[in-house]
Length: 44
Image (cartoon, rainbow, N blue to C red):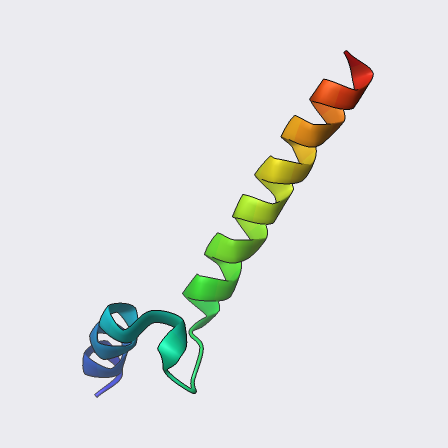
């Protein structure tokens, strides 16, 4: 049951009401990477 839900939510993306913890982790990593790049540009 869970594996089917994960595959469905992956296809739908953020359109689905239920957000997987994997999506949250991916988004948080992207935000951290962007923040680090901005800090590098500001320091240089």
